[in-house]
Image (cartoon, rainbow, N blue to C red; front, side, top):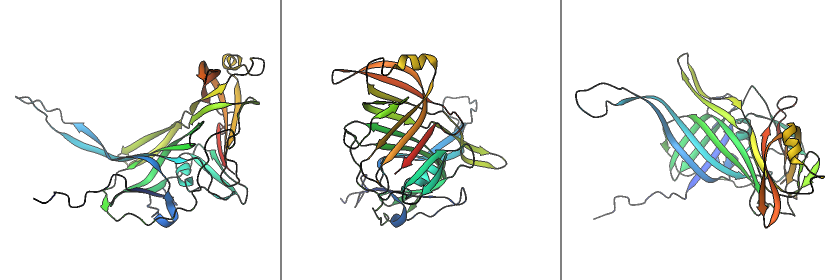
Length: 315
């Protein structure tokens, strides 16, 4: 007897291509040659359905069924936190940043800066192909988080939502891998110290989450799609503990002082990523880093002048 599947589809074969939308909600038609994303750890929920139970009272046991009230698509993936290879060029992940509540400022030959905004958010179109089946996300919005951990790869973590579109059959895209230089490990050579309140500190991990609140609208009107309605950025950093006279996180936390935090990863122009944040230390705990005393600091990112609590700069 012949196998049911003559050629089973491969779980390993996935591709994400995405492009910023000129008009929110209009398919931007990304291509593999121009818009491929070097994604890792891809998780796709192709049909995230919302249903309303009918709750009919019957003279016997059993379900009374439900009706479909909304359909959505969700994807989670990671990319390396690395520049595009040439300083002053936008990284290929920039459409996601625009769809995550950032504005982009390009200075040719120098930098690409991503500042938070509070209105006029962008959106992007993503095509996610799972070995021959293409899932489209149009009008997608995202939340992003960074993770920089010693002896590891610096990551930008993405979680995005859109309205559901029926998948179609399409061959895997032909891709161009340029614009994705090999990332550098997080270590003493490639990563600067994290500086908090002007004090440079050795650190083992830094995690910052923009905390976008993505709301799925499906209202009469119509009012439909995924919107960013708020953000609550937070994070943590684990630093080796210097003398209390040098750095006193307890006093800063008790006082509720808003302080600056910054670090830069990457040793070569075009591959650098710089993080700047305004943070309150919301908690202090001890950590043991290779038998050396360290502090694990809980962080709340809070704006001072507005939209200034987090800046990501590619150099």
